[in-house]
Amino acid sequence: MKQFLTVGDIGDLGKAIEEAKQVKATPFAWQELGRNKTIILVFFNSSLRTRLSSQVAAQNLGMHAIVLNIDKDSWKLETEMGVVMDGDKTEHLREAIPVIGSYCDIIGVRSFARYESREFDYQETILKQFIEYSGRPVISLESATRHPCQAFADLLTIEEHKTVARPKVVMTWAPHPKALPQAVPNSFAEWMKAAPDVDFVLTCPEGYDLAPDIMEGVTLERDQKKALEGADFVYAKNWASYEHYGQILSKDRSWTVDAEHMSWTNNAKFMHCLPVRRNMIVSDEVIDGPNSLVIPEAANRVFSIQTVMKRMLEDLSRGK
Ligand code: CP
Image (tube, rainbow, N blue to C red; front, side, top):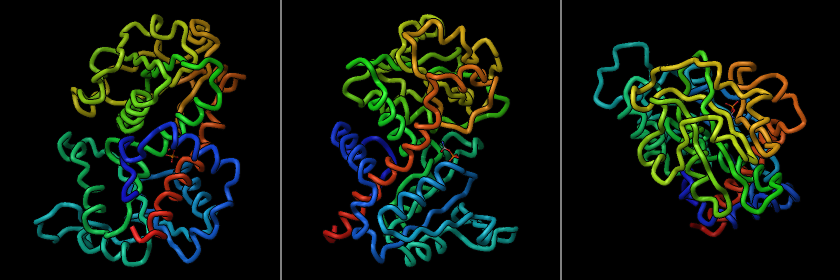
């Protein structure tokens, strides 16, 4: 595995979930794979779960992990090509990336959408430079448009907690005071579409449809109540508009998932990637209730990324 950016990079999802379950059952069984290997985790943005789960996963595999916080631990980096560097940026990504690559065996990168330009974000400009110039396998730790480690952990959580063979999984937009990226909902939708045994429904207000390629094949129900009826899993998330790129079109609190919303479901489990704004996205009662999976979902972040790291290390050990 040379890169982990989208659902297409993981191959057969059934096999990936079985492997993740095996990794979870015996997390230290592959300690030799990571011996004398190093992963550098590059963060352009803040993180709690991704940062810690990546380090724990690397440690479980016997691998050394180094975290680099861009603009905090390192020089300020220029990302645009062809510019005269007479401002506050000391180093260009064009040099920084191959230098980072020369110190490690695998690279993880977190680089969020900037919401300055849809083209810049959806071309995955930063991530592509890491793939092109590092000479190392690259794991997306959340890019401008995808969060595959999160979606993999989400699917693992659904597989572990489902009580019917083919659960109805509803992703609902919910309000938030800030413009959030589309990476999590894009990946969640992609992974749910690819999962063999899931009925996936998306509900969001007008103006919040995701990118056309993500929406393709998705059942969209504009009426949130109708969407939630019979749901086995409710996945709440905010994102800013794709159509009116990066804009907040609504803060309608009637979309906040509370006990009444959950009463419309089939005693559904509640999911959210975290961090979450309480009583904006979800009521205290729901997130603290017995059907909330937010903590086991976050715990599974270790095993999704560990499965990806394991596959990359196996390929490296085979000289691929
Ligand atoms: N869900 C998630 O990626 O959390 P962090 O932003 O804290 O890493």
